[in-house]
Image: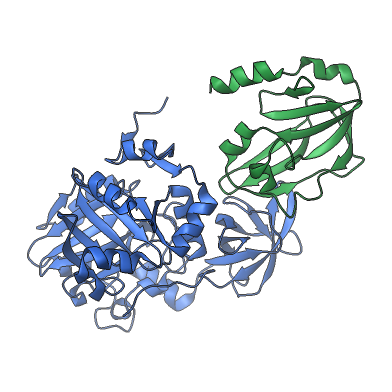
Length: 371
Length: 124
């Protein structure tokens, strides 16, 4: 038996709703509810899905000059963030690998709110403590996190907290929902418009139950969270990138601020910058791409990818059935020369070859609210 | 129904004369979740006991069906590749996988009765 799994504050609600609990990053989490992954996925693309993401790490980094200190670890322009503005960032190692990916929100001149992956939270905190001397790192262990996602999320949350109507993608505000103090950001992991709501663990069940009283709202499990993010072309840390993968290999160049690149105003200056900037200049031997499957067979993580001659030229890191697409898609690392959109390759599934084609991502258009 | 037998791996076998229809149980489909892909054997395929005869992929996992007895495939459910969700909606009916002719019909005597299978599932 493994160690005792931790429970989020919504554990009882998950059970009550028929959630199938599975171990995930040390927590017992619902992979699906009674409706099942496909219905939950489609519901989120049509109305509003609520996800318990309380297992994720919530941290606050503060201290004089925190913005410039954070730039040592994150290849983004932290100092350029406005108050309540947020940004996606990879946290790089000295070798240029990705230690984690996170969302950072500026709460104050010298105060930043970070949401990090559950499985990496402890290592992230140690890394921050080691490198951010003089900054205070606070773990918000008594905060829960809900994601409210879907095309009707804007109107739903707008009715409850009118101030959120003005929020555009990647901005946050402190509002009350059902009388509870919440920090709400317009962000998510589904490709849809939506919000992430940080709320006290003691209040999250009330907020979730109140949200579920609305006919547009349904709880959604981790299974659909995965198919939604895959269709939206969003990486899953630990699958699609890790400490052995650089942001250039992971096709996350867009996440490196122009100001931090070779000819930028604040070029380099982050851990692994020599490696990362070198790769931007010289290219990389392998790269993450999206692919679509010609046929219905799911091609899952771990499958080898071969060329016409049968040489292994890549490996699948995420893959499966996309319910909105009604087709199988995935992400893979392929060797240099095979990354062009439209390149025909084959995946090996149970010893059989399955034709695939390198495809642009997202597979389903992102529908973020940009005002 | 007394002529339906089961396995511990949640397959059902409906015996009709010298032919047996094969599928997965309601419990199995509920554990797998939404089925999105089914791979069936060729008609006429001769299978040994224990051979993997079909692949089932749901959104979250891949599974397979193996026959606990030697048999020849006499028919497959041609509707499944295009409508794999039949396995979820009607696992004991329209979601059948294949019909086989066992080499030795007595092999089926070792399979679980409906009562024994129900007891097994209730314990899980």
